[in-house]
Length: 177
Image 1 (cartoon, rainbow, N blue to C red):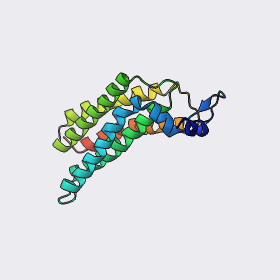
Image 2: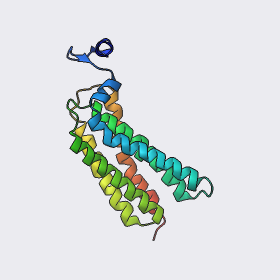
Image 3: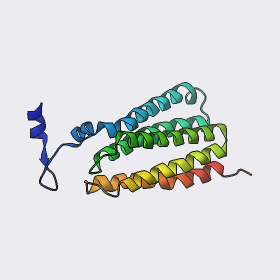
Image 4: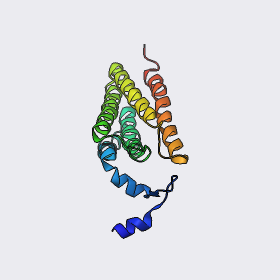
């Protein structure tokens, strides 16, 4: 196995051997695991919701919740977790990664619950927590061992999520008295 890893290495920016992304992700799995487990669970939950509830009797809230679970809490969380594990020179500690993933998931659950039950206060609290978690993630990407398109794509992805929060809040609360 070590022979295969040695042949898979390439020179990094400092002339040091650099592992391919998947092997680096495996080496830093403690930082990725909380995001990966929760992200995969959200994708499955979104699929179950779509199949069991939204498909037979589609409602605006049901379809939205399935899409939010799959795209934001699922795929988005996998992207964020991989970025957290791969981009910094030192990945976050397992505790820091778990707290960040928990904040991301609690905020997502509050947002979904607030929209589905029409409780805007719950939605707003979830949105505020999500904004704080994303700001923390964006701040954490300021010192990166990686340069280039991956870092810019990660920052752009988080920025797009941050920008979508007030847009989603305006759409959700539009027309309410």
